[in-house]
Length: 64
Image (cartoon, rainbow, N blue to C red; front, side, top):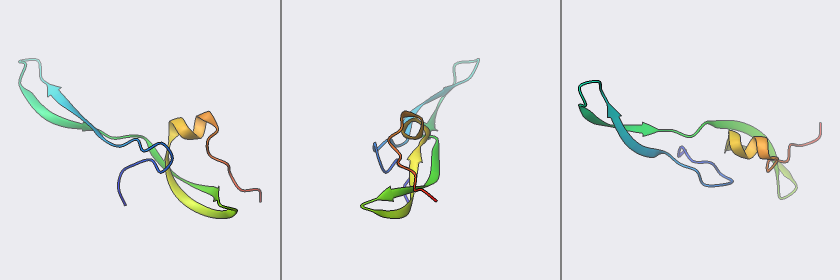
């Protein structure tokens, strides 16, 4: 399973780790993904969603 939000498509970004001596090495910024039960086409499904999508209300949780 890819480290990607299934709603908005957010995926890892790449940048540089810079030390005090200005040594530069590559690093990765991963999105904050959570597994959530969600209604998809009338069915309940577990999806990996970023926290921004959860907070914004794009995730419709199933009624228990």
